[in-house]
Amino acid sequence: MLVLYLLLVSFQYFRVNGQSFASNTKINPKELKCLVCEKTVLEIDRAISKISPDKMVEVGGFRLDGEGNYQHKTVPQSRSELALSEVMETICDKMDNYIRAIWKENGTLTLLSMTSEDGLMNPNWSDVDIIQDDDLNKSLKYNCEGIIEEYEEKLIEYYLDGTDNIAEQLCIEYTKLCHSKKSKDEL
Image 1 (cartoon, rainbow, N blue to C red):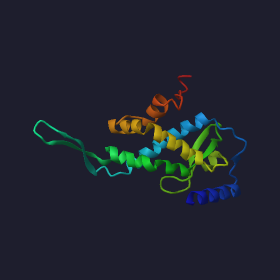
Image 2 (cartoon, rainbow, N blue to C red):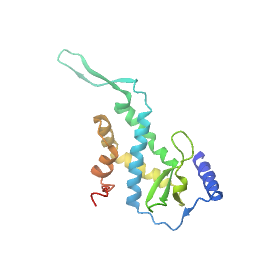
Image 3 (cartoon, rainbow, N blue to C red):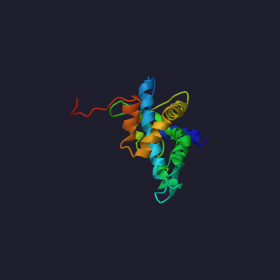
Image 4 (tube, rainbow, N blue to C red):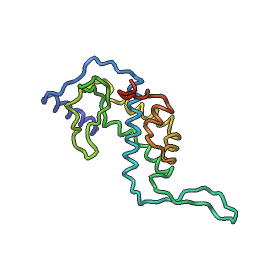
């Protein structure tokens, strides 16, 4: 309900202050799913970064070593499978804070966070045309939930292994939801 209120207040504010809206915009579902994948990983990264690095947990199985002792090791909580699973259970709720928009500068689709991490209005509002849609962006959360459901194990594996650039690894390399973004030099 708070998100709906924020969305309505934002629309009213920007309508009064000259914010433009994109109309009759066709959205490529594959491009949207790619953006959702990238934002999902970004939100997971943010959630993990908020877990205190000082919190440690014991992990290990019920296997005994040669002397009959359990094998345990201590790892930062942010790198435990349980903590990662808990983050992923609720991460798609963060999609309620995003809207579809088109960058005025180059006409590309983006998912814009309505507020910054510190709770202030996103400073990029004037740089985009907001796309009004009938589902109030519920499809963003739906796509996020599909990604988490299908690829949660792989995501956890990436985080446990300390993989660099997880968004690229998951969204481009593993799932093929996104195409490799070529630099100007490569074109």
